[in-house]
Image 1 (cartoon, one colour):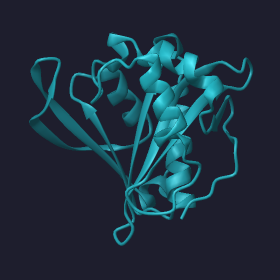
Image 2: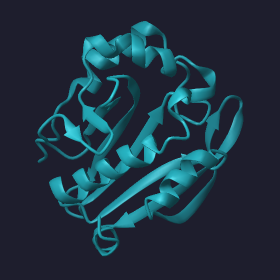
Image 3: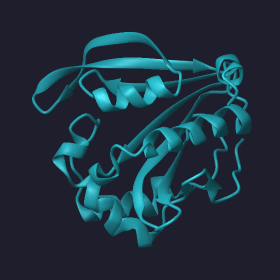
Image 4: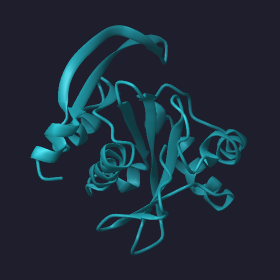
Length: 187
């Protein structure tokens, strides 16, 4: 089980559960085609974002395998919502999890995704005692690959034509990091 204390603070960011006050800011980037281009969902309407914020994304803890913890990423200095991240608890016996993230294009190029994803890895390894954390990205998403590389995650597999996105097949690249590797890197 995982019951984080909120907000989760990093040097420049606060990670916290979404509230109804975040709906418009989340919709501003989740409704954009260029943001969703490499994601397994289409641009979202405001109503779709609101439904998820009030439902699936309202979870504040992980109590059982299969759940995901979605958190907003807020810039400490300005209070601006930059994006959101998710930690999935995939398997208790094998102690496996998965991370994901999506950010507004205006937040790109400042290291926010790397900083927020590192906080998720810490939460997974320290909070859930995970042994292994994976991330899956579209092979064309080079910016996301750079984030995972900076985190020290290893490219382990390429799944060819495993997802139908925007009327074409896409490949998925799987990255992984073991708890021992995370700790050896001094994280």
